[in-house]
Image (cartoon, rainbow, N blue to C red; front, side):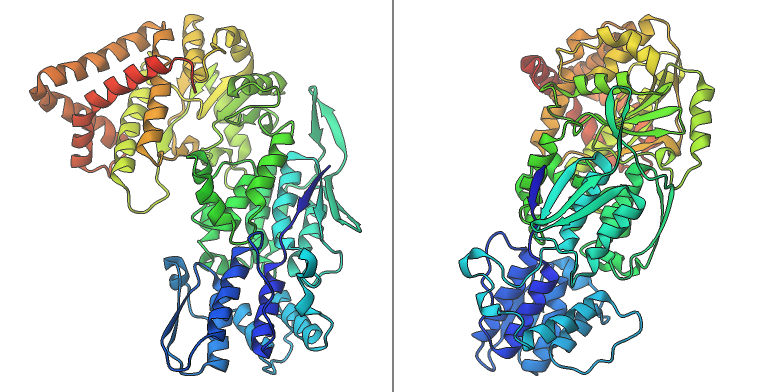
Length: 608
């Protein structure tokens, strides 16, 4: 059983800090393992203690909404009229100025007589109780960190939510250190929600809370968790809004429809969390990053090797999370090998993880294990970094229609569309070029497959008949790190198996452009490295035609006057918003890009 050291509760620590400032007591000491939000408020209050009356002062609060609300009230009460400016990241400055539970809490901590309201927010109730305890000397706040041990702060139930999510989806057992059954925190309700709806039980012991999934059963040689028979959940998040990302992604992965109410203010958090959950995006939001990681997804910074960037985002509330997640997920036998869901008894949805699986082998071996274990006629494959098609989302689509649509093709391989979109509203040149190129590739993929001469497909969004895959398995080149999709296409064409296309919006998965030129070259060289192993005549002819056209363009540049209209038409079919000069720049650069990728791919050989 893995032991998880949770951070202190931000909500409690920040309220104690404000009370210390109000009463002129020494502020608690802060350390690197504390949530960044606590450190930000602490540092701002320390600056105010040294403030000289009348001098201008600017307090930078990063993206800390609690610090902003608390300090707005604190300045009004203790520094009226002082030339003190509160500023922060752009997202913080975008937040509306409406009073919140944090505003009310700050006024209570300052001694305002605010009547207890019916159905009062747990955050406001917490503020009342902390104030009573503080002023009644029940907290020995001066000794809170003596000897390195907290004497007054609870561990954070909001942070615990992501481990409840992890266990609900992946199974297992964890000890969450320092959690208490009797808590000031409203997010304590997470234990009740996950027990009721998601089959996760909580046992309180002196060290904290042990959480685990309930009864396990054997299924096709694998250990699977028996879930509560729940297909619809209605939850009011008014009093526990921070739980929404974890709960929403838990429901999504377990095939449960979530009716969420009380989520209006989630659009004004570190990001619009409603949209971010739907699109599986981090958007510089600590809770989104942790919720996606707990669900088994790989947020963009992690996929692009930007671990430090991800760490900075998550440090806002839980500095230790990334290290703990890497350790726990690495120990979990099913981390890289999981059948995500079985859709209506007919289609298994499979997402093999990139990396090393439990047998110290790569993604292809994980894929093989998954398909061998799948109990269904069809298997729907996705890479772990795509945004799933609407047709696989049981919250928005009739799943039976999905099953019938797939079965109606009577195909052994169904090629599905992909669309490249950026998380940013304003595209960089690198993103715009990738989106244009991807559109052309997708249009060519669909046209050739519809004509019965398929030359491309992508395992990022593909449906295969399980028995057909097993028949072709020996020809998928396990010694090559990638390419299982293209080698599968070749093997099926050799056997005369039926290959078709479902080119519809509801079956379209979304992929992201890579963030750096280096990552782009590595990806393209990996693709090119498979080229010498292709044997299918259609694929070889298409590749030769593309190569010849680009070589001719290098030797005789005016040929671009013929090439550009043809390829621009392909791009516009998939991405009508593509600007002509972006497509033209892509056309000009493509011969050099193709040659560098091909040579680099051949030199890299079997490296990932």
